[in-house]
Length: 132
Length: 123
Image (cartoon, each protein chain N blue to C red):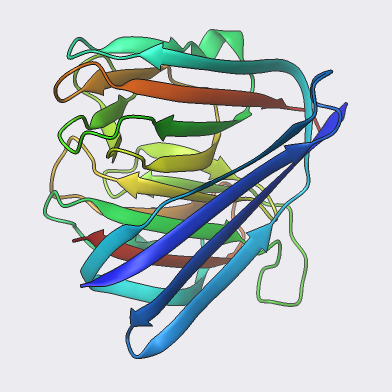
């Protein structure tokens, strides 16, 4: 067992007439299987880009970020769907966007994959940890 | 048009004999719909974000309960489409394509779900 501490800060001075500035944090107990910060070049075929294998129905804390590049150098604005391995997308990331969520799909034993919206490639960053 | 700046840090000092200290931020252009609310959930799946009311948006959710058993399932179909779960005190931030509605369904009790939705400015 280990401890993962996520912290999210949201700020805006002009989203509404009231300034937005708050921070939320948590202390999560995590265990194996886990995958440290990694990168992969995703393509248009989801099955080629499985980053979280079938979870067996466990809760998996999942982080990913669209690097805004195809290979770490060449910029791209291609959108990337984040999908469960049954091909249903649950988020779509533009360049520079990221997400963090506790994945646990109703299908039980499914994982997570990336799928680039068009015939292109995008370098994606990701990591996951199993809830302990 | 306004700017929303989300920053996420992930830290751990006892994993793999290594120190994790990830920090990532973004500058998001938002326009139009902003929703800030708290929803009292129940064991009956209830919609809290209607896709037709938004275009692509950024969603923050937090389970405000301090009771471990009061888990909130976030679903894309009422009672059946669970995508992820929020334990007591857990939160998430993600870009929502707003192609499907979002529902909340508590495992037990009536935990409160904090909801913040910021609609992306069209490119």
